[in-house]
Length: 130
Image (cartoon, rainbow, N blue to C red; front, side, top):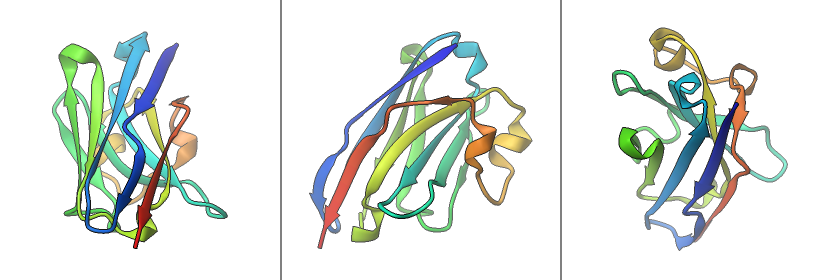
């Protein structure tokens, strides 16, 4: 089992920045593909970014490409999501997720699916005001 705990959510004005953290514990070698999803009120959960921890390769959805950055600190079993140039449409609950997979199905993709991820955090609220 892998446990994921997110932190760092909050409220910010449009154009501002936030950094989310996700710390994994438990059988962490089963979490070599880490990801962030988000869910806005009334909408489906959507994939934002993923990272293959063994080589640092990444995937970003078109909606956040160039504004968000996923990174890792292996010593701390922690993945970060740096969010810059935030927009009101980024308002959502952000979830950290993890799975065990190969690199290609983790980051050489065109879309992320919630069903592919086995482990989930509890979510952290991000609110961007205009």
